[in-house]
Image (tube, rainbow, N blue to C red; front, side):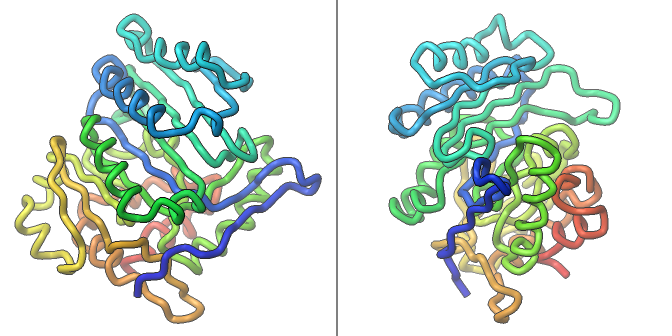
Amino acid sequence: MLTPPSKVYRFHDDEGKFLVGRDVFVAAFFTRDLYTAAADAASLLLSQWLLATPQTLLEWVQVGPNSSQYKPYSTAMTARCKTELSTAKARRDLGFFTIRGGEDCHNPSYEFTFIGENTPGGMAPDATCLVELRWPSEHVARVGFDEIASQICNFASLIPFRSGYASPALSLGWENAEHVAAGAMKIAPIAFRHPGYDIPENHAAAGLMRRDRCRGARWLTFLGSPLVEDIGGLQPLQEHLDPRVGIIELPHGVMLRAGHSPEIGDVNRGESTPLLRSVASAIEPITEFETAAIMKRVFNEDASLRWERRHLD
C-alpha cells in the first residue's frame, strides 16, 4: 500500500530551543572516488543545488574540517564552500562544509553537506566522501514526488556514486549528548512503527560502510555499476523486483524507484511496504547489516540490526 508521509514530526528540547528530532526528506550519495577525484563532481552538484534552492531559505554555513561554529549564510561564505572543492584544497586529508537553513542549524530544513576523505584506513578502510542533501517534508509534498525524483536523479547523474538513496527520514539534531538521547527516544519508536522512514546517520556510514555494500532499500535507491555487477547484473536484478519498481539507468549505475510515492507503512495498522520489501530482498547480498556503529546514536546493537532488516524479517 502506498502511504505518502502526512504527519509532521517536530520534537524540541525541554526549553523549546533546539529540534532534537524531526521529519525531513534526505538524499545521500557515497562517492566512488576519494576527495581529490570527487571534488569536481561535488562542485558541479553544489552549483546545481544552489540554482534550484532559493537563497532566502539559507541561513547558516560551516566550512572546514576543524570548524566548530556556524556563520551567517552569504555569497562570500558560499565561495568558501566552493574553495573547499578546489584542486588545492582537495589534496588534503579531510574536507568539510555544510550550508543550511530552516528552524535549527543543528537539524535544518534545507541542507547541502560535503564530507571529503583522502586517507581511509584502520577501522575505516573503505571510507569515502559523502554528499547529503535535505528538504523539508512539506516542500516535497508541495512540488510533487515526480519533480523531486527527477531532480535527485539529475543530481545523481552528476556524481560518480558507489551507492546512495533518497527517502522521507527521521533526523536527530545535535547540540549535546542529552539532546541526542532525547531525540533518539522520540524517533526510534516511530522508525519501528513506520518502516519506510530512513534515519540518516550518513556521516558514520561514509566512514564505516564497506565499499561493496549500500544502506539498503529506500524510496529511491542508487546502486553504482560495481554493486549491480555484484548481484548478477541488471537483468537478474529486474527479474527479482516487483514490476512496480522502476529502474532508471544512469551514467554511474542505476536508480530503483519503489513506487510513485514513498511507502511509509504502519505496523500498528497492518499497512505493509511491499515495494520496499521487494527492493530489500533483491539487494540483500549487498546491504550493510553488520556495522551497528553506524546507528549507535539511535539504537543499541540488537535494535540496530532489527531496524536495518525491517523490510526483510
